[in-house]
Image 1 (tube, rainbow, N blue to C red):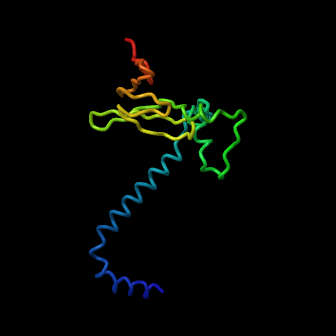
Image 2 (image 1 turned 135 degrees about the vertical axis):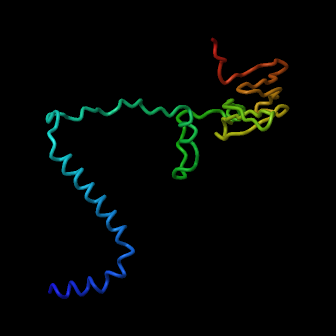
Length: 163
């Protein structure tokens, strides 16, 4: 048995000789890893009664906001829209709109409105007419100026911060 092993070593040693430095480096690092594990596991701990003391973070409750009403009325869930408890007059619903944001392309701003009758979003530019006949005079960053029967009105999404 020993003679067979020596015969194989004599046969394959010349072919394995270029890889001996790599094998020696691998053996060295394996020995270092084993020694580190052995010494770490055999040393005395400072406090054997040490426990992990962590807690689950306090999360804020989920808040959907006004977008929830919009998404629940869309016809994407099961094809059936929920029946409204109190039906709104069709004429009043067609005129309802809500200013929800602004977009900017270059230096020009456009207003983003939510149409009440369909629940869809529409972009409008200065000079366009709103569903209830009001004319858009100007659109700024977070503001909309409209002409309501000869009166100029400004709607702002947010109030400027006071310092």
